[in-house]
Image (cartoon, rainbow over all chains, first blue to last red; front, side, top):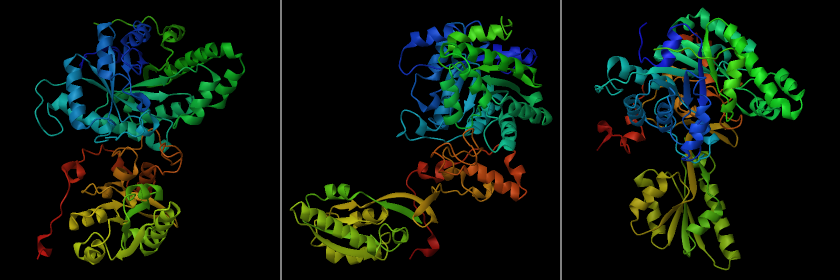
Amino acid sequence: MTLTAGSKLEKILKSGQKAVTCECGPPRGADAEHFRHKAAYLKDCADAVNVTDNQTSVVRFCSLAACRILMDMGIEPVMQMVTRDMNRIALQSNVLGAAALGIKNLLCLTGDHNSFGDHPQAKNVHDLDSVQLLAAVKAMRDEGRMISGTEVVGRPQMFLGAAANPFADPYEFRVVRMAKKIKAGAQFIQTQCIYDMERFAKFMEMANDMGLTEKAYILAGITPFKSVGMANYMKKFVPGMLVPDYYIQRLKGVPKEKQGEEGIKIAVEQIQQVLEIKGVAGIHLMAIEWEEKAPEILKAAGLLPRPQVD
Amino acid sequence: MVVAESKPVTEILEMIKDCKKVLVAGCKGCVTVCNSGGEKEVGILASELRLARKVAGDDLEVLEYTCERQCDPEYIEPLDEYAKDVDAVVSIACSVGPQYIAARYPFLPVFPGLNTVFIGGAAEHGVWKEYCQACGHCIIGDFGGLCPVTRCAKSLMNGPCGGSSGGKCEVGKGTIDCIWHLIYERLKNLGQLSKLENPWGFKDWSTSRDGGPRTMIREELRK
């Protein structure tokens, strides 16, 4: 097995076993205890835990620091990095710093637009986009040079990831764009939350036909509904998110206090469905502010205990 | 053209509150075309200022003049005779105008009467849209003649992002076209979709404002 970074996530994926990643967002303040508490639920049920980078453009404590906290807890991080807030100088610097701290998985993103966050007055950067960040880190890792051509002394050994949204438009271009990310350097892909299973299956079929599942590991994104309110919100207000009405009807059909339980049942079914689809290499569970439910969901889906790798 | 919009009169009144006599200076260039700083708008603003100060019991004398252009030293020379006896100039050119006036009259206060908003064009009567941010190295030839630097909210060179829905950008509540959707459709029509298959490399921003304020020199035109 040839490894680029040798992270647990990379080893599990390359061994052909279904991988499980979970997401854990840092808080809007310096409360490390709160973050440790949430992360502790994920310790034994995720192969690696994604740390978001000021997601939805809301200021939180930084991804790099949160990754370090996870490592101290014995949890392998996937550091998320967005190009919205930093230029190529800061991005490359942070990648090198992350590698120096021993972080081995990096998810390269453009990030949500700042007009949606808590500082809509901010100046955004967008010197690079996610595809260019992938290419930049790949060149530092494989060729030992920065964007400028400057030699990197000590190459950052990163297992590189990217996001894909099979549900945005133009639909037929989404898989081409994922291919572009893979060309630029993405070794694994974590998808947007999947609710429209039919459309996701079609997306995977195209990915298989293009040979993309041979080149990168695709982890299907799952987010459990906590309530019918959350399902409605995602349907109406999250751009590029398709939530079929039958899930909303199903959640409406149970008493309010049972909706969370029903949401978990749905998530477990979705996990089982995506794992049946050819080319799906694992799942990415984003239980937003509901991390404590991750063990229960993953156990019910038959994904626990997690495999051990050297 | 440079597109500009009027500042609220209250904001202008606050800027000139200590003045007794001002000149409102318009421009017959871009701001005339976008109906914000031409001869007509000079007249309207001057009347509004006079009236507001009259109502406040603090009369203001307002002179009016519209330059051929305010972004050319020779065309602001006619302001010399007005500049002698006013307390300040309110320029309703794009922001180039007040800066030329400031340079010409070192001891005369000058205030902007407009907000300069973008380089763009008219979409329909009364509606203007942004098309260019003057990055200094045009790359739209790679994108079907459409500019992702300016017209994509994230300036993506490898879009569209996951927020593209039904041809619209997630920013702007459905009012902004997803330029990447349009680039995709256009290249499809032109049979050039293969242009979008490979990652677009790193843009050199040194030709943009990021390289510092720019000067363009054409030696063959210099006297």
